[in-house]
Image 1 (spheres, helix red, strand yellow):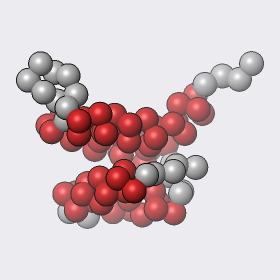
Image 2: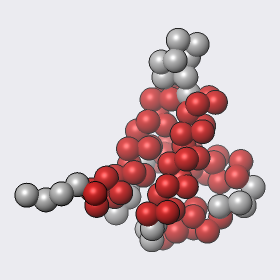
Image 3: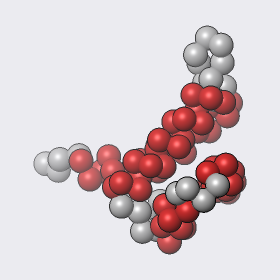
Image 4: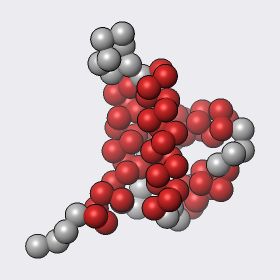
Amino acid sequence: MIQLTARQQEIIAVFRKKDGGLNSSVFQKLERQQLELNDIEILCSIINNECMMEGILPDFEPNPYGVELEGLLDVINRPRVEQSTPTT
């Protein structure tokens, strides 16, 4: 289950608006907690693209927004990472 903070939900809302409906089904699945691995991949791509465009300083270190995006990426990607982690 993906638990987003209020700020992360705000960021997702901005992404949804910028996306112009292209991935509306993915955003709807996120709201319903019904993401599939492909949906997670799409969201991670959207977050990574935003990070590359708006989230880094000239020295390639993350700015404060970039740090927020890294945290959002961790939350969105967690189910995929957990699924691929072998249990012992």
